[in-house]
Length: 398
Image 1 (cartoon, rainbow, N blue to C red):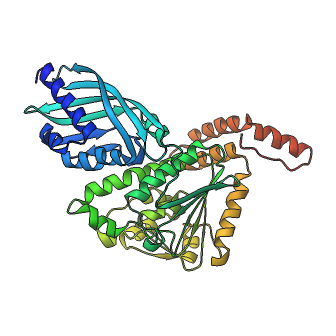
Image 2: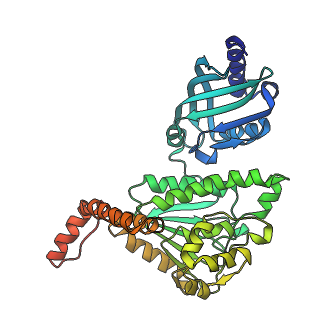
């Protein structure tokens, strides 16, 4: 396709997207169209889209739900392989926050038979997130920060906090809020209703997966797993209060925590074998480290369920706490940690995690770097001075 034709087709694409002209889009996109969008986009939008309909419904359509925006092309360049590079900006506003969006982009378009067969997107993901910042309307999570503790309460009680795409997307947004808020010095996971979470929402799977569950699960685990990557890197320690059932990918809320309390009778089960799935939520990484490879294999392959007492014995959780005391105990622990040396806690968490893959020599080097970093903090200086003066230190998290 020559430059003129390619540019005209690309221009028609942006015009059709701006006006929501689906017939025009269907005519412009090749039947075997693929879209590949930038990792780190908000709302789990970054990833691969395997058809024109997939891109229309699950990328452009979902952008339209959260933003009033359009792509404004500025420059067109034909590449050596006849693909077209388009640079420009997404401009508009985020619907919930009302904040402006101005995000630069580069699109690389491929063509076949005069139609667009592939779109590869690069964009300024930070601008997309900043436009959404300040949006507090979560449907599946109750989020608040008090006494330095970010309380993340799963809030689908009628579904026993089953995990659907919306919950995964909102968890990622909450993780980013925690990471970007210096007032957050500890995190508490809990659940509203009869269970912390029963894992994946089977009803949502059947309503949205059709015969293509694989692509649905790929899209769902994208934001869900990215949230846990962020929680893993927080300076803030994490406490989880478990009750009722904790199953499937919902065990990720146990794995992510440094301290886990559970009410008596709480059941912990991977559940994946029962529905023919291999697992998510980080279990294949965490479980062998927490309870050992043989027991991890038993929990996965035999679908072995643990009650709360067994979970303590196996090393999956920290302690069993009376049901009526669970929430207060968990929050009290999180608040105590929030009043501690935040930067040192962050390095402790990082060192404990890296110890599984480092050699002793590597770990000793990281410990030297970590203690040099934490030793340079105001909290360390204050605590050492307080120790000498026989006084109790006050930590400010810096």
